[in-house]
Image (tube, rainbow, N blue to C red):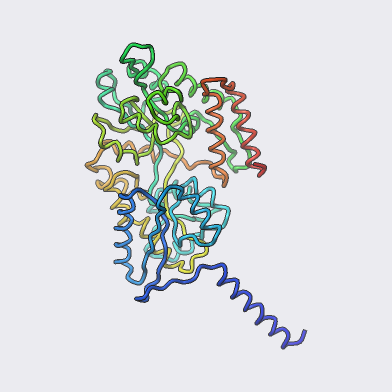
Length: 441
């Protein structure tokens, strides 16, 4: 090939690359005053959106050269909307993600690794965050989201019920056997019709209980399902006994008798209605997230929180939320500045005063802003302890689908009609999870 021909080929290739770049990378946005405009995708109720608006104003004040377009869906389905936007290459520059949704996105190369920005930013300190939540937002050794919060399920309990029953309040010595014993004193049949009107507890997510009794769903490298084991049978039997032997927690139909959506009774995927059983005083305890403390502040009784009861080990699966960068953003440096601010100490301190989530920075989580928050619960130290015991879920991009199989497994052996034998339910779930791991389902 002659030199002119080579030069011509290079020019054509360069033009094609340029065209492709403009086709697939979102266009740069500059406001009338010359500021760069980036977008932030998140969601929440009106009060939470107002907090985001306040935070955006603070950011823009500190970064006068950047404007933020806050995008909040008018209805539910944030994650489905995000999936569609990412596929259509129109997603926001910065997006809210939680641990579970991050797992499902992590292998699709839709988020940009943050390590290069973190290492070159003298104002960023990686060791300012709880290591476990950073691990949860990492994939193949690279960090893809900065966490704003972290935590694990905690135990809410009705202090008045415990006082009336002459029981000591739950603490870190409580096991699920303790819960079974307490049920004998906390359960109530007010009208004497032989059906309970109040139960000791509602556990809204059963996967933590399985983990506490030693169940490991996946092998350490995430390549095999290790669910089908004698330990899993024992853990599931304990779960079954809590509901059907000790009657510590309502079954699905018993939950429905309170006029709520079915769920609970040991199920992994409870519906929103079951969380009302606690303020209704239909249950004396409930395992759920700290965020419910806002809704429970209007309760007509005295309540507090404690660490979850445990099995052979304490803790549970870690959860949390943070912010990721769109891999196709035209403004990566500005997006990094926004992410760093949203997950930084000033905003975490602001949110700590709200008290409905655990800051992902130990310095803020251990500060009076969080621990001495005047709003209930009083025992915020227990919330922090539970978070420190928590472990990241087993990593796999299909973890949400695996969780669904665990939920179906629990439903199948906890069913009130035609329940499957526990070993059969476990075997079915293990088979389906293996298919997921092999990419067949």
